Length: 248
Image (cartoon, rainbow, N blue to C red):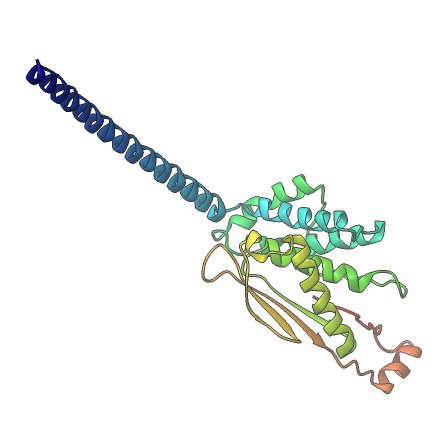
């Protein structure tokens, strides 16, 4: 009787050990499968995010990004006046060809009619002159557009010339501030990183390629007017005198 009891206990222990070993193996297999699923899902999300980040945009999408950046500044408290919106539309018209800088040769000529139709323009002018009274928002308008352009257009270089060093430095500070507002205070969210910045320039690395370097230069210009030119203009013997506050 005692031997039979020991035999039954031993058999039950063997069964329990076998079930426990089988259950342990199944648990380990499930854990391994779950880890594989987690790894695969994480890798898929990383690949999709990378592809989406580096997906090449068309020039039309880049132009729309520039408009969206300006609209975002409106929402951030820098609401543009009616005239500032007109300034920016003319600036965008003058800079349209820059958005096709990385496009294949001849693509801009093929898209020329489509550009006019989509934007409701009659022609494309590469030069623009704006003359307004003081306190009309010219400096802020230029800063806002330069910030929107550098965040949306690859391999762009913007040069701004002001009437004095103080204004040129203020322009560059405003551009930096607006760039951070567009990128929600984090340049990496726009795929940008700082390469170099000082009192006269800001150089950013864009997300498209190593060659995607975006530069903003802000220089003080020394305006000199020849007295003889003034005399000639007064007597109608010369051309008009134009003093530029800020020029791209």
